[in-house]
Length: 232
Image 1 (cartoon, helix red, strand yellow):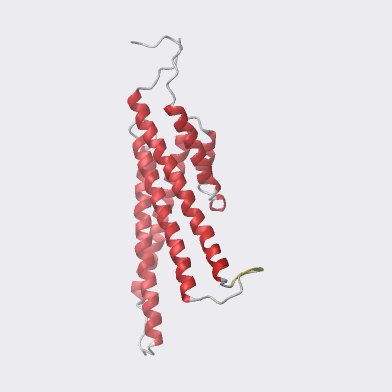
Image 2 (tube, helix red, strand yellow; image 1 turned 45 degrees about the vertical axis):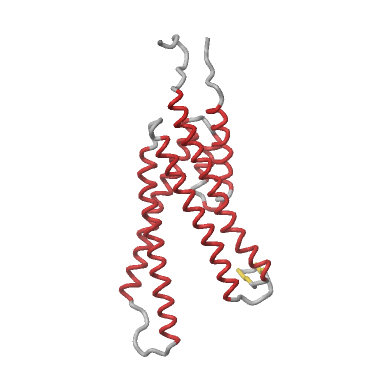
C-alpha cells in the first residue's frame, strides 16, 4: 500500500534491525577504543607512579627511582594490552561498516579502506617484530665481542621498509574509519557522532573522539529501538 503524498515512508523492520546491529557494533568499537587509549595512556603513568621509576622529559619530572627490567616489562605489557584493544576496536568498526553496507549506501568505501588499513597494521607488526629481533640479536652479538658485523643491514632495511609501507596502508584505513563514522552520524542525523568521527583523525584529542562516538551511537540506538512513528 502506497504512503500518502507528503509523508516519509517508514523503513522496513528488516532494515532497522540491520541498522541497529551496525550501530551497536560501532558503539562497542568506540567503547573498546576508549578503554584501549585509557590503558595505553594512563597505564604507564600509573606504573611509573607506583614503582617510582624516574622519568624525565624536558622540564617534566616524574618518579625518583631507577628503572628496572621488571618495570619496563610492565610498561610494555600495558602498552601491548592497549594496542590489542585498539586493534579490536578497528575490527569492530569494520564489522559495523560492513553490516551497515547491507542497509545503506556509502559504506562500501570505508569497508574497503578498513581492509587495506588492517593489512597495513599486520605489516607494521611483522616489520616491528623483525626490527626488534634484529636489534636484540645485534646487542647480544656485540656483548659477545664478535669481530664481524652484528647487524644484517639488508634484512634490517627490509623490516624498516615493511613498517613504513604498513604505516601508509594503515593511514588509508584510518581515513576509511573517519569517513565511516562520519557517515553513520550523517545517515542518522547525529551531530555528536559526526564530530567524533572528524576528531578521530586528530591524535591530540584521541580520548574525546571515542567518547563522542559512543554517546552519539548510543543515542542513535535509542532512536532505532523506539517504535517507528506513523503519520496520519
